[in-house]
Amino acid sequence: EVVVNRIAAGEIIQRPANALKELLENSLDAQSSHIQVQVKQGGLKLLQIQDNGTGIRKDDLGIVCERFTTSKLSKFEDLTHIATFGFRGEALASISHVAHLSIQTKTAKERCGYKATYADGKLQGQPKPCAGNQGTIISIEDLFYNMPQRRQALRSPADEFQKLSEVLARYAVHNPRVGFTLRKQGEAQPSIRTPIDSSRSENIRIIYGAAISKELLEFSHRDEVFKFEAECLVTQVNYSAKKSQMLLFINNRLVESTSLKAALESVYSTYLPRGQHPFIYMSLTLPAQNVDVNVHPTKHEVHFLYQDEIVERLKEQLEARLLGSNS
Ligand code: ADP
Ligand code: MG
Image (cartoon, rainbow, N blue to C red; front, side, top):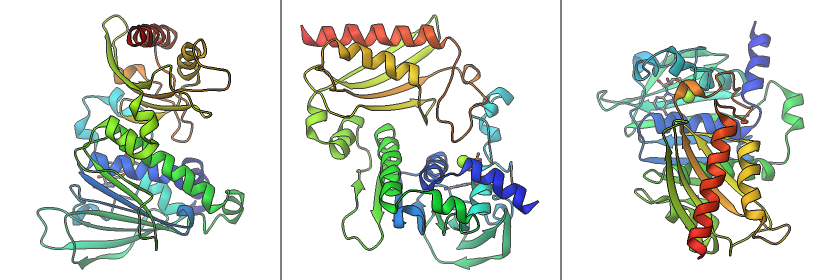
C-alpha cells in the first residue's frame, strides 16, 4: 500500500515547483501577508516555506497529511465548488510520501508552537512544543529520496530553481498585497523580494524589469453573457521580447491555456516583428462549476465552459485596447 501511495503521490508532485505551488496556495489560503521561501539545490535538498498565516491547531497536526484531509470545505458553498480543480486535501499527503516533511506551526490562540514530522501520510510520534511566531514553516527535505529513478530524471538544481522562481514570481504578481521572498540558502541577497501591499505593476517591475513595466497597459473586462471577468496587464505593441510570457490565473489558480495564449499572441503578431513577443498577465474569474473538474494538479492545461467564445471575446478586447492606446 505504501508503494501504491508513493506512485500516486509521484503523479501529483513531479518536481519541486509542483510542491511549491501547492504550498504557496496553502499559505495564501491561510491569510498570510508574508511568505518566505528558502531552497537548497533547487529545492531537491530543501524546500522550505515560512508564512505568517493562521497556523495549524495542535489537534489538527495528526491528520493534515492524511489523504483528503482539508480544513477548507466550510468555505465552499457546495460540492461543485469543492470539486473545482479537484484533489482537495492531497498536497501535504502526497509530499509526505515522496519526501521528509516537517511542519512547525503556531496559531494565535495557542501559547506555544508545535513541530511535527511526517512519513507516508502519518505523523511520527507526538508534536513537540517549540517557540515561534504565529504562522507555519513547512520543510520538505530530500525530495524523491525513495524514488531514485524519479530523482535522477529531474534536471539540474539550476533548472529546478528556475522553475521555482517562475512559480513564485507569478504568484507574487497575482497577489501584490502579500510580500514574497525567494532565497537560496547561504546567499545573502534573495533572488526575488516583493514588498507587502505592493501593486501588480510594481511587482512586475521588480521581478521582470523596468522595460516591461514602462509599457504596460492595464484593463479589465466583465462579460454578462458568458459570465466571466478578466483583469489584464499587457505590454503595448512598442514593447517586444524574444521570449513570450503569459501569466494566467483562473479563479486564483496558476494554469495554462494553449488556446487562449495562442489567440492573444496572434493579436500581437500583426504588430510585432517576427520572433518578437509580448508579456501578458491575465486573471480570469469564472463560475467555479464552469471550470473542468478533472484537471490534474500537474496538468496545468485547463478547460472551461464556453472556452471558444470567451477566448474570442478576450481577443477582441485586447485588440481594441491595444489600438485604443496606440491612436
Ligand atoms: P487543501 O489545501 O486542499 O486543504 P493540503 O494537503 O494542501 O489540502 O493541506 C491540508 C490542510 O493543511 C489544509 O486544509 C489546511 O488546514 C492545513 N494547512 C496546510 N498548509 C497550511 C498553512 N501554511 N497554514 C495553515 N494551514 C495549513
Ligand atoms: Mg492545499
